[in-house]
Structure formats: structure tokens, C-alpha cells
Length: 467
Image 1 (cartoon, helix red, strand yellow):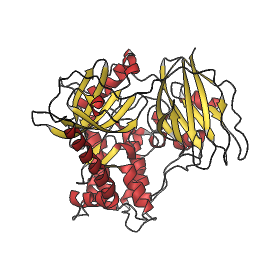
Image 2 (cartoon, one colour):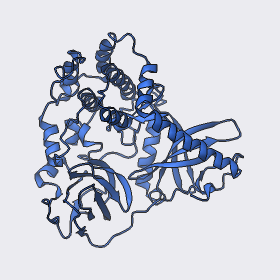
Image 3 (cartoon, rainbow, N blue to C red):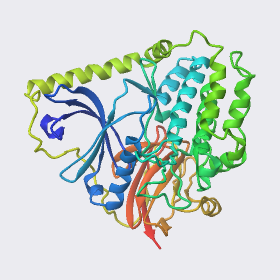
Image 4 (cartoon, rainbow, N blue to C red):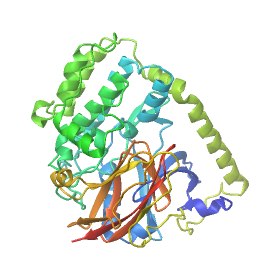
């Protein structure tokens, strides 16, 4: 990026680099720097300018800010500022010098090192503390927020190199005072960790987050994915709705026998059979922590440094170089706040009639697309919009795939067989399958591309129409 000043946000945020692109906006690492003495790293979440012209999208974006700004807890990421500049909205939040739990666990298993049980219990205890607080949180008038995170997963639990845990991304949380309400039957979150009632599109409370956290804990202790990566989306839904997690105490010598009962209770299919509050789950984990008298945040931080220290150090080398570059071009002064927010968004452009194409390279992927505005029962019985293909053959897909909905907004659950395919929406990388947070609007055409090493690239132009 040659003209660094193009990346100034409100004059006091220096964009260092882009971290991710989501369904509604972009996420950046930035430096907040002004003449009043504030000099810190922040995470900026911006809303695409074209979505800023959509009142519903603006409400959804502000929902996240409004909910998160009511939360003040040492294990929840802090919100610094909510702003807008020339029609572009942004949210500035705390930067964590560390990595998401998903990255740390993958690195640990790649090294052949199971996650130490004391660390698992400590991290789950602190996550319970954050959720117990959030579930009981109130607004400034003392009214209950009735908050449910709805997307507890390893990706949304951050751990710093000083051993501090933070829960992040209340972006799809549901609260009683939200201006934007989730439609009946609409599910949001990562499907692997969803509670049965969330998958059914039923009313949720804090026990749904507890089920998700129990699933995370099972994977940390076992060192395995709770679901087979080759399972179709339909099979995943069926398993989640009808099965119980396996026992673990016999798998590792260092697993306390109480772990099985705690996990079984947290992940019970019926909410009434779980701990009735996340605080109760936290208390059960706290009893286990008593046995680990030498556990400390310093040791947890050392574990993070062991797994990701080089990665974190390289990130901060780039930060230092970027900061020096800003200084060299005279950006250390406080500029007049006259520059628009330029984050180079890619708009969702209308596309021609839906068609699927792609020449096979070695093997073919099967893809599954699920529109979240339908009731889950309808999705299962209709078989979703499923595009399948056998190895060494071309993908046989509908010539004009159309998803119909009675709602104006929804989201897509995307999966491939095998999973782990990179998903691109209109040329922008959105993540990898299974992907369950791709928000869409009715009467729009979407260009979806799936890429997986060793498989033919699949492109699907999806037409979403309102009835």
C-alpha cells in the first residue's frame, strides 16, 4: 500500500494490516496514536460502506457495539470507541497480544503435545467466569440484558502471552434490548459447537453457551474434533441432535475422573439437565483447580509463548516497522480529522443467472449450502441445497440453483466434503468450511467459490429470492 495516509481512520488510527474479512465488514489491526498521550494497539472492525447504506445492516453492526459496551469484565475484550466517518461505521476494541485458542491447540497437537489438563481446566473456568457475568449483565438502568453469546468456539477465546484469557466477538449475541431481532428459526454460530436448541432455532438462554463451551472442553481434553471432518452437513446436524459426547477419563492418565461428569452435564441435550447457570459450571471447575496448587497465569503465558512466541514476535516486528514508516512520512502529528475511512471494500455485485462450473484437477468436492432463515426441520427434510459429485467425475449441480425465503435477511451455512475448503464470496476470502456465519439478503445473487488442495475448484452462483 503506497499511500499510507489513505488508511487513516478519524485521524488517530493508523492501519497496520488487515486481519480478516467478514460477511458485513473488515477487521484491522491498528495503532491509536494522538498528542494527548494515547498510544496503543487496537482492533478495528469496520462496516462495508455499501452496507452502511442499509439501515438493517447498520442496526446489526451497532447491536454488537451496544451489547459489548455494556460488558466490563477482565475475561471479556474491552470496547474503546464506536464511531462513524462520512457514512462509514467502525468499532475500536482491545488488542490481545496472543492467539485464539484454535491456533494454539492446532500448534500443540502438531507438535504431538496434548494440552495440559490444568491449563484446560483453568481456561474453561475463566471462560465460564466471563459467560456467567455476561448472562447476568444489565444496562445502566439495571435492566437485564438477557445476553447469550451464541458463538462460543475456540476461535472466539483468546489467550495472551501473559496468560490472560478473553472472550471475543459478541457480534451475533442475542440480547433482549437489541433493535435487530433474530428471526424465528434462524440459527447463528459455528454448527460444531451449537446446542441442540440452537440448531432447532428455539429460544435460547445461557445454558446454550454452556453446551458450546462443554464441546470446546471435550475437544481440548481429547485432542480430537468431536465431529468427523468428512461428515456432511446433514450428518452433522443429525449427530448433534441425537448423540451424547463420549467419556474421556480412560483416554489419558492425567484426566480427573470428575471431568466426565462435568462434561456430560454441560453438554446434555436437554437444557434442564445441564448446570442451570454457567456460574454453577464454573464452581464445579473451580473444585478441580484446587488440586493444581502450582498453576499460574505466568505458566499459562509461557505455554502460549512456547506455541506461538515466534508468530507473535514476527507480528510485532511488522508493527514496529509499520509505525516507523508512519513516522518517516510525518504521521506522528495529530492530523485534522478530514480524511474518509478508506478500507477498500469489495461490494456484493449482481451476477448473471446461477450456474456452476470448474474444471476438475484431481478429485471433486461435494458442497452443501444451508440458508439459515428456514426452520431447521424444513432444512433437514428437504435435504438442503446439496451439490454432490463422485471422485473423477464432474459435479452434477442444478442449472439454476435458487434458495427461496420468506424473510428479508438470513445467513448461509456452507460445508464441503471433505471439509477445510477455502470459501470465497465475490472474490473475497471468508474462511474455510464448515462456515456458518455468512450473512445474506433476499433478492441477491452470490458468487461462491470453494478451493481445496487436491480437489477441483467449485464455483456456485446462488440466487436468493424472497417469496
